[in-house]
Image (tube, rainbow, N blue to C red; front, side, top):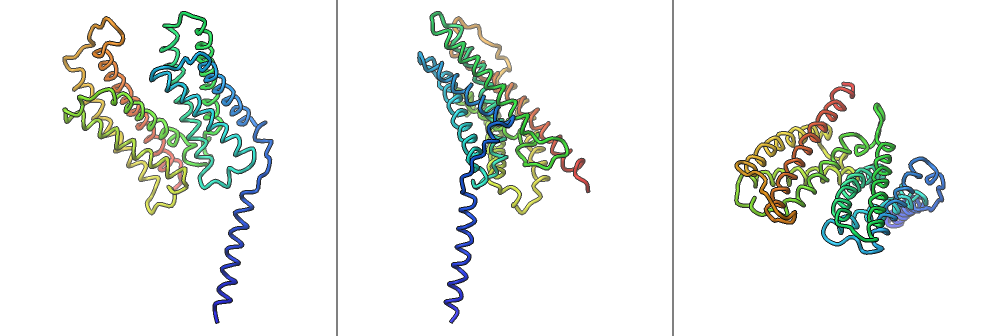
Length: 317
């Protein structure tokens, strides 16, 4: 006797849910998104990144690992920027099952770091050895890449949360630092991939474990934030993040002592006749990891300071 009533209730709920979903999926042209300061900056990002990889592709000036990285960076940033502009232009950004503001903020910070790296690596790799008409295209790619970096840096400044403003986590200084910390860890892993002897030394294995643990936890925080899951965890999120930052600082403090001790004790830079000498390359990779470790240590310290200020100083008791 309850079946007809239950059926009507289920149909009503399903109809309401479907109607709500369709309302969210309604395409509405939002021309204002293109003429706002943020929209103009994003259009410039698309233009500069597209021009950069187009100039490099004319004479296939992207051979080798660094060339492939540069081409990937320009294409990746171009594709995601086009996606962001398109979603906001047709007002579909609100229908996506993620925090759009956190996603765009994290991407702009990541793109800034990737393009910055490319703007240094690409000319350092290709321009010094260039002696033909291809030089103009490679210099052009470098200029466009540098302008693209400036555009993404401006976007980070436009979307960053201002003091006293209620906003999403990844638009704050601690949130942007999370992206920086994860990116620096990726650079460390890329250099570690060219070094194998660390597997035989317990001290260096500990350093690699620190890099891995901090990277994984930082990525989990970023993914949970973009997926709107961080705030639903049954823990005091802000204080947990502060505790994690303290742990990361302590772990990286051990790394910046142990890594140089094992790698540079009685090990000065060898004199090499060729820049491609394996001994010099290994030594340079070790030094690069050392500097990147210090960068991440500083980032985690600043992250802790800002997080502590936001939770215990800015927030009223």
